[in-house]
Image (tube, rainbow, N blue to C red; front, top):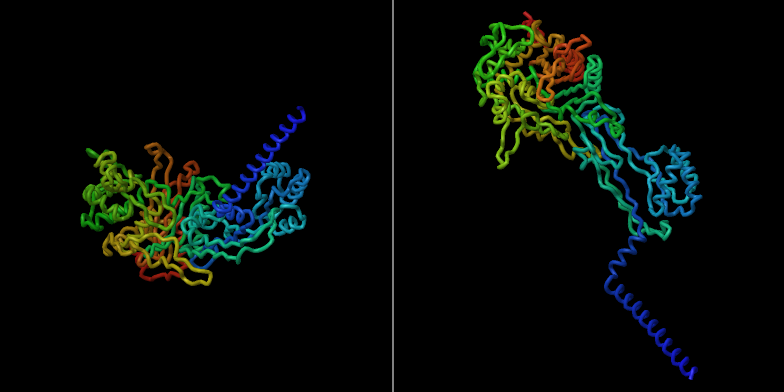
Length: 606
């Protein structure tokens, strides 16, 4: 009976075994059928990913050149050391790899070993980017498992800090972050190529899966900047900032007829390749970003607006009083040092009379005067081809219902209509960026037309063929703000006297052979809505030669140190620097000295 029972139990277990085996086999066959007919594409893609090794071929970033072809930015191939941690299985091998690489590359062996441990399952780990050729050869000679030496492009700036705030900089991957590098990143970047290889399970290439696709190098950007003028500007700016122990300084040099920016500098400055190590405040392009009250450098805008509107002539007399000007609605207006009494309107500019321009603004009225300020381009961005976050204060904006709120509308609501009107006349209660102010001054200098500042001349390929010529695209070149007669009279009768006459505020900027015209400014610094005692922004804006200006220059020095006893006014601080920049620039540009201008200087001194 036992034998019969055991035999029955054996048969049952046999049935169970074969049933389970059959079910498992059916499951395997079902899965194979499912994969073959329903997931074949997904499996094929997975196999391709596992067997493909894509090696990108970086495109060479384009050059940045000055207007004469001098190289300001270039990309150079340099070796980079990386490792495949997944191939280094043994702990002792990791230790040896960390020690050997650290000795050659100057790294910390313990940190490198920890990184290898943490990323042991990864297929790629950067060890050090942009090593020397000698280091790369030493690493190769080690023959360490999983260690690779590849080549990448490194952005370099042959002239170091020259034009740093114009050029900007890139990140380690070659993408533009600031300046021209950012503005024209699309042109400079190029298009990467690739090589597709077949690899084995140990990530070793065993064949090609297609032809090599070469990359397309980036195109080259040609600037309006002239490196020779830029070098002079940066040298003089550094001298004046250091001499007066100032907080910072800005200089812009522009062709008044074309809007081409021949030089633009800020100090302190930086070397673009070391931008990551710098304070963010140093990286800011203050010429485009930082609004400030222009002070007396705004007076030519006020007076030229009045002459254009036929409210005054330059020869007409205006009573600038012998004491402060006061009245209901606009408070009390003093002069800086001296009171001038009855003088021609032209002398309001030469002697920089606050009372004179305040009375002129009252005669014009808010509607006309603020409208002219808008025509000069204040309250909105200039359109320069650089990242330009600043538009001055107040600036045009859009209301809740989408309506446009103009600079004029906002000025009328500031502080009180009478107060604002008289203070804007001499550059208070309004803030401008340096590029805005120089643009407006160029409008007076060139005969009354508003130009759009340009930093770039065009784009060329590696053969030198022109891809784009930006010089033909100055949309504001034909926009007239002043009549030519008014603009010329402002230059020859008023602005030249600021420099040529002994009583002018910028006689230290006088040049032999060329007639310099301009306007000084000494503006108080505003903090928390109040003027700070003994903190000033000293500036001088000028051009030369007077008959047909070749360049216009703005030098702005922020917070010169009063305690040095060297002076703090625009005439004392900024005018000498403008003189040196003009002298160098005019000689460099081979600007002829005109006899007529020598006579103009002599006459204005009489």
